[in-house]
Amino acid sequence: MVSRSSPKLGGAFSRALTYFALATISLFMLLPFFWMVSTSLKIDAEIFTPGIKWIPSQLDWENYTYIFRDLNMEVLFRNTIFVTLIAVVAQIILCSMAGFAFARLHFRGRDVLFLAVLITMTVPFEVLVLPLFILIRRFPFAGGNDLLGNGGIGLMNSYAGIVFPHLVTVYGIFIFRQFFLGFPKELEDAARIDGASRLRIYWSLLMPNSAPVVGTMGLFAFLWAWNDLLWPVIVVKENSMKTLQAGLAIVAQNPSRWGEMMAASVIITLPVIFVFLLLQRFLVQGVATSGLKG
Amino acid sequence: MATFQEARSFLEGEFWEKDSSMVATAAKNPSVSQQNDAYRLSRILDSDGFTALLFLFIPLLILGALKFYPVVFNLVISFTNYDLSPNFRFVGLRNYQEILTNDVYLKAIRNTLLYVVGTVPIGTFLSLFIATLLNQGIRGRLFFRTAFYLPVVTLVAATALVWRWIMNPQGGLANTALDSLGLPGLGWLTDPNTAMLSLVVITLWGGIGGNMVIFLAGLQGIPSELYEAAEIDGARAWQSFFYITIPMLSPVTLFVVVTYTIAIFRSFGLIFMLTQGGPSLSTNTLVWEVYQTAFGYLRFGLGAAISVVLLLTILLLSIPMRLFQGEDF
Image 1 (cartoon, rainbow over the protein chains, first blue to last red):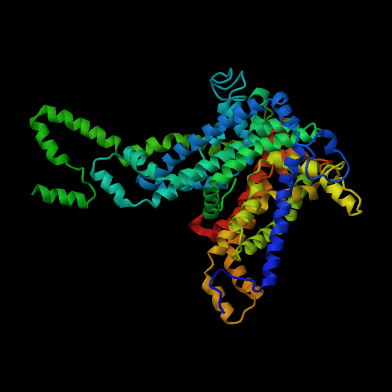
Image 2 (cartoon, each protein chain N blue to C red):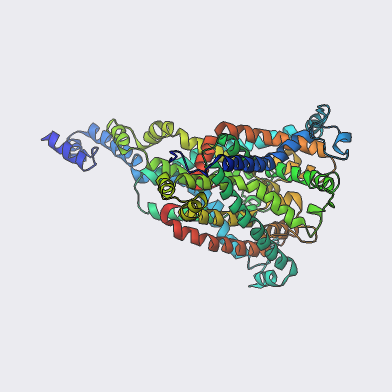
């Protein structure tokens, strides 16, 4: 008998083996999350009792109240949310504009220009942080700087400085261009005949019909900005401007208060997991189609 | 006649081109001439060239500042002894020379390679293994896929903290488990002999899901007729796997190996949060030394030189992928 479904390993025994392997690996994957939540709800005495106590004998929220009271979590959250919001909006607008120009407009040097943009996709952010730091620090007429960028701290310790690398991404331009390329030419022609300008075609025809790619872009922009660590660590020195990740790096310097650290980890991870579960269709799509991540 | 002209201009894609008739009337009537100017202006504003300029100017200006300027400037300062102070001078290849002679940077090169060798083969194999299991048409696929992918979206700070707690030598879950098996506890991240191993375990945990999703997409792209034909011919499951799945997946595998290697070369967050390159330089990778040399010791010239080495390595690594994928990247 030939099975009609996807390839099988055969009998019931190997099927059981498959489930067993999957369950074991997912246990390994999920255990740290469980341990994180469990520890965050324990009192200190229980955290350090010998042996493994999987579930706290009583749920204790003291660790959570502590991190909001003493660790400035509201400030960290406000900064991160603000920066992430700007990053998401900026990338959707700017990348879709560039993607539109590369996909639907004809002008001299277009393909060369697009190739030049695409090539930079291979250049990772980590090797460019030094010049970028100097640019931000010496940004003209910002943070006490003069025209030549001397005298002050430029855009350091500012939202503008943190969000700067998140304004435009090559990946964003790329996926918008791909999507716009696939848009039926007939619809655009019909709009042209009705007298629509190119600006209108972009704004009233293409963008309202681009929900999938806007969703993918928005989700990636969210994850990149929310998860960014290296850049905020470099451009922010003042505690009042730190983001969640950079702020947590300070907490990590005092590795004895495990309860509080696990509470902080739970609190910063929850929004990401929530957004992920809500929009994972877009994420899997985006990763699977282009093979890109982070 | 007019309809013929219209039809022709429409066929030529210039439906709006009515200039000839409008110019003719404009000569007689000045108000039409004004209208004509406005019409021309709106035509320019609505041309492909102008719209492209309008749409590309800001995005490409920012991209230039984010990508093109840093690559060039990085190269320039890698030949200087720049340290943020205005007086600096060119030192030729001295920074590059230091990378190849200073023990710290030689260790960084060695550790980066160790990190790659420890992570990429096992990680690739495991994600292919899991993807294959998930592709058996099993129940609860969505649950398993989500469980494997969750670590990927988890913040690196949270990942670092929870693993640091699990691997804590005193009272950590890992040592408690070893103890209950009657085995001696390990120093994990605090011991130079096990720090890299611990880092590899944590990195594997955080990265398997991402590659699994790519493999899963690749597996679903293999036509099921191939398996059905093999089954009819009496092929066993493992034969199908080695003679159909593996060859059909090879472009995907190449892609995963290359991107994974690059990702490991770039990995900064875990090292920053967990070990800061230590203990005794057992986890100082090249990325870490870029950060440490520039922002710790303020030796921007040397840091830039390490960046250039790193960038060139990554560009070299991505060549096979570009070759095989062609225009499809």
